[in-house]
Every structure is written in C-alpha cells, then in structure tokens.
Image (tube, rainbow, N blue to C red; front, side, top):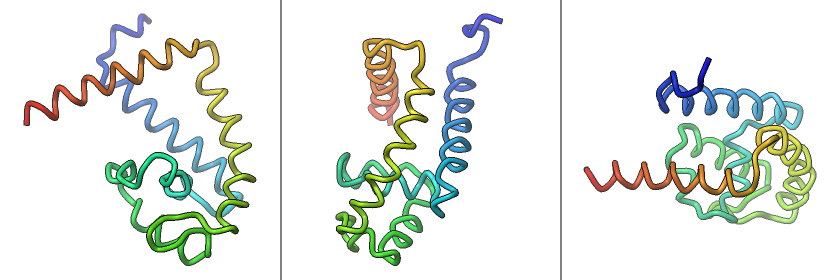
Length: 124
C-alpha cells in the first residue's frame, strides 16, 4: 500500500504509539517510562517541551523523589549518571527509528510538522 493512501493523522498517531510503546518497554528495566526520559531531557530542550505530554507532571515528581532532579527540573549528579547510562539504550532505539533516513529527510520532516503545527496555532 502507498503510504499516501492514509492521512497524515494516521501516520502521526501510529508513530506516536510505536514510540510510546517501544520506549516504555526499553525503559521499564530502569523503572521508567517515556515521560521520565523526556523529563530527564527537559533541561536540554526547555521545560515547556513537556507541556504537551500527559503524565509529565507525575514523571517530574518521581524524578525529584528519586533524587535525580531538583524541583525546578535541573539534573542532580545522580540524575546525570542515570541519564548517561540510559542514553546509550535510547540512542540505539532512535537509530532504529531513523534507519534508512538521511539527516536532511529527518530535518525536513521536523520542519514540516512544526510548520503545520504553527499554521494551526495561528488559526486559533
């Protein structure tokens, strides 16, 4: 089947589900979910990156309780060590996700999705 036979919403939802499930399975051995991983990365991308994800607040609270982040989201020494350990596994997952794509294809996809989101945000 031609991928264009399905609307973009189908592919966005399908990819989201696969990313969510795959990362949750990968991180389960560490007692983490994708939300925890995103919260560990929030200082790198900005705390507002988590706003669109359900469950992000609980993940942040869990990381504070573990001593991995401060209440404002900064990584502690323990958090940096955990991040370093887990990042290797996540990198392999990302590489598998992007297999067969060039860096330019990935960049074009992200820019396209950002433009579409911007168009809809501007309309509201």
